[in-house]
Image (cartoon, rainbow, N blue to C red; front, side, top):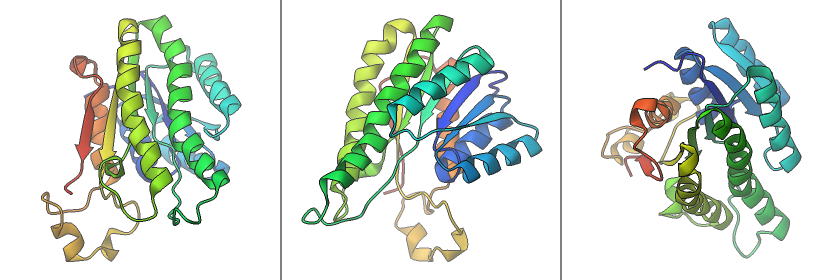
Length: 239
């Protein structure tokens, strides 16, 4: 599965799922744009991928700021002439009682996790349609369907991503831009040795997921051979 010379923008690519997705696309020959709020994390990821032979560029981006999103897409087009793939991964979470969650905290989560998906998709699509289309993958969560206590803003944002995904798939379809979503369950982004046996056994797959699992799903959804798949949600979970 080669993505040779495809230009892929990954938001929140400095760590966790985003880093795993960026690395997988780089290994497949893609030109990867690391969109990351943290300058240190973004530069380190850029260094690592270049060390591994990847073609990569870090652009510092706070997806909660519309002007950063516009600049990200413009700089990507200026540097590489096009955008083929967008992975909307950046997000934040706040576990806080609905009795105590402040309006500013609600707005931060919605703007970062949901509004950014629309704005990034819109700005990337403006560029994609000029070169014949592209693929967008939005990272949602199983929390869009099943909740834990004190996750109202996060759950609302992730549920909104799913609705936005199928709406964009319809609107952008005539421009040959496919839009799909992935809803990860428990994905371990730290030290897997700290996981207990019971943590793995609660999943029908008999293990907790990894960023590589999500990355492989992104590769599948973005591959041109799978251009019939759009407006879909993939559950990468054993819950």
